[in-house]
Figure 1: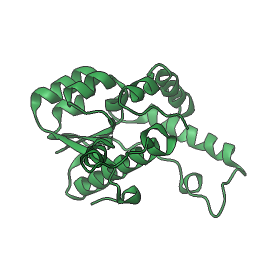
Figure 2: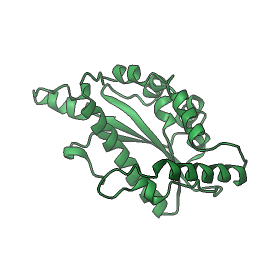
Figure 3: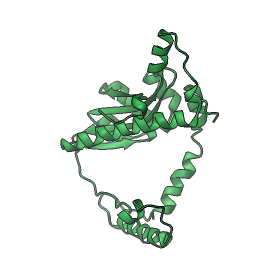
Amino acid sequence: NTPTSYNGQQFSVIDITDRQIKEKLYDLTGQKQIKTCSHFMVFCADYYKISELADRKGLDMPEFTHTADGLIVGVVDATLAMMSALVAAESLGLGTCPIGYARTAAPEETSKILELPEKVFVVCGLAIGVPREMPDIKPKQQRELMIFSNKYKTEKLVSELEAYDEVISNYNRTRSGGTTTNDWVSHILGYYREAMSYHMLDALRRRGFDVKR
């Protein structure tokens, strides 16, 4: 079980074990974990189920999928479900790897492969299996940069971020399995620039999520 907004359960999960399907998704994303894991679980925002039941009962389905809140609710529900699955899998000693690229790499092709109906879209994938290797864990921001007391903290924020940026730079210079010269901020901004070409709003509209307000 997982928490869900309004108990509406605005999510669904596709547990993929079929090798051919995993190979097709790997071809689209280039993420090797998809084809090598035991289970690749795809977490989706889902308003199809409630729309179908409303139609069967002759109830009017409001255009909640055309609002920002409707989009956010579906994403939050699917994300909470993914984190519940991740924690459960890791508590059993399994390895996990969230794969957001399952959402952005090729939304239309992925939807066809998974036979997603309208009002359903992929939020994130999760590879689960027995790990073959234990890579170094990337350093995360210190607690004081992530959790603020009572109000958002801006004092000394940039200087503390600079220190974290240097921690990441040092990690990348010395980590096992291949080193780089990347810092944190430039590397992440590079991801943002790449994401500017994804056209996710168009993909969402084709899935029935035409956000107007």
